[in-house]
Length: 98
Image (cartoon, rainbow, N blue to C red; front, side, top):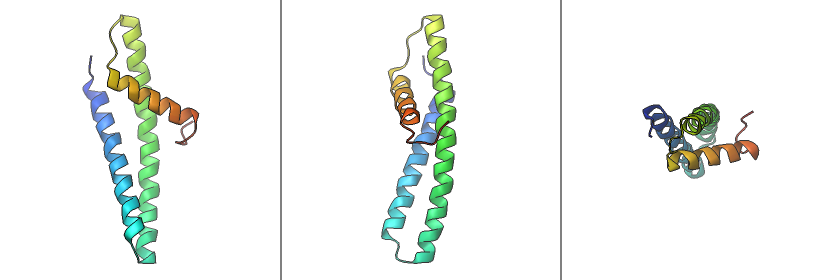
């Protein structure tokens, strides 16, 4: 069973990844040192937001999976895959999630 809340959170996470990629591309092609510093600051803000939203999504997905187990409902495969990736990132400390 799909959840509109989880879908919106995952779309927001996806957009944050896209924004980070764009900022990295901007840094790579920028020649002005002051512009690069500005992009670096934007990158820090986006990364912090990504960490927070990833943790929120992980909590939502954990609750969703637990509810599905409790109610004996099938888990949406896409949600489970994202949950595994986020849990793995947390374990490997790719994201600074506690």
